[in-house]
Length: 185
Image 1 (cartoon, helix red, strand yellow):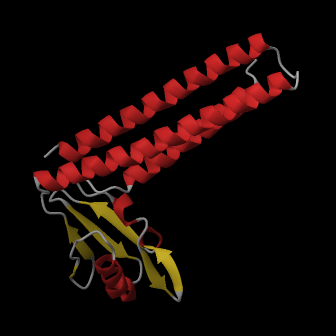
Image 2: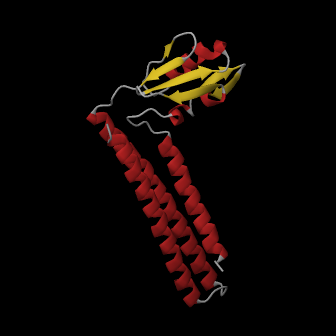
């Protein structure tokens, strides 16, 4: 049976990795992804609503996203919201859909995106290590209070380190995958 402290630590580490994975999905790469628009909101009857909740978003072969709103009156609102975002893309509105064309990024842009990816992943590693630090501190406190033996403390510390290594490795894999995605033409 797994110790409750280890279960809690693993759950927290897993959530940290999942949060980083979600953040990386929103990071722009050379290819278009509907996840890039998740943070952009349009005014839908007075309520700021994510684009993916008022339109269908499709990826095309020609490095573009096609945004087809469920109501035509949202076309200009979607167009304005994208222009106001920090994506740096110019949407075109043909009266039926909004088209976002993704130009091929320069090597310099790709390197910048890889650097940003590395920063995001590093934040995830720091979060995982902070969880390890908190758990080890808790174990030392439990030993001091006589709740667990020193042998149990050492054993649990080793298991926490193994968990830490596992989730840091997962973050490294996320980085490698995202880097490959960014650098491919």
